[in-house]
Amino acid sequence: MAAIKPYVTCIKETITAAMCLENFPSQLIERHNKPEVETKMSKELSLNPIIIARTKQEKILIEASINSVRISVALKKIDDLDQILSKRFMRFLTQRAENFLVLRRKPIKGYDISFLVTNTHTESMFKHKLIDFVVQFMEDIDKEISEMKLSVNTRARLAAQAYLKELVS
Image (cartoon, rainbow, N blue to C red):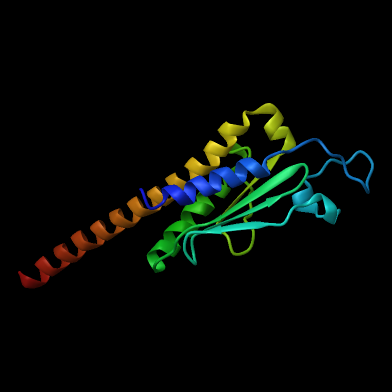
């Protein structure tokens, strides 16, 4: 846990800095107020994207604009089992995206899961609670996938032992 603390602190501070959002209608289309980070209609309203990487596979992309922030997370995938478990788990979560107000249904290419926080979210919810949710979500996903991997390996070992007992007898 101590090795991940600087990574999590850096993410938390960067998201806090990026989440200075305000209501800003479209400059091109009247009566439209779309997340600028998604539409990218005005280049001057978006900040440079920030990538915070712990390893080559485990990284986070923070894209901020005047009225929205998109946070994309790539989880660590050491082997094929990690890849399969994370893909299935992310699919399960994205199918239930409406239950998580800030979760996007489709992640950005190259990332496993994405969050979209708009100015309406920061107006109706506490900003620090949103940031804590995203950070806690990242930590819990990592923990859940590690636990599922241990469970799968344990079940495979027990099945192999039962199979080998049958061969010996």
